[in-house]
Length: 109
Image (tube, rainbow, N blue to C red):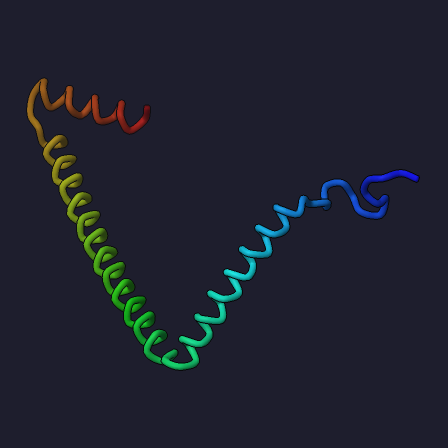
């Protein structure tokens, strides 16, 4: 008779007793944490959920404010760009011609 693992259990699924004991301990700890969370939600779940909802609402308002600020900054930058382009278009003489030529090269290249 051979000693060793059974043919029906693949080698990748066999575990050492120490590994299995460690995993069992970890799973028990996770189960205890989940039960504690469920107890907390059952006893005072309304306050936990209310706090989380208040936190989410505050974060939403902050994000909305940042989006408004970004839109304002974009609008301001676009306005400055239009003013610069208008100034380049109106620049007189040889320097104006060089500026317009450089702008055309930047736009095409």
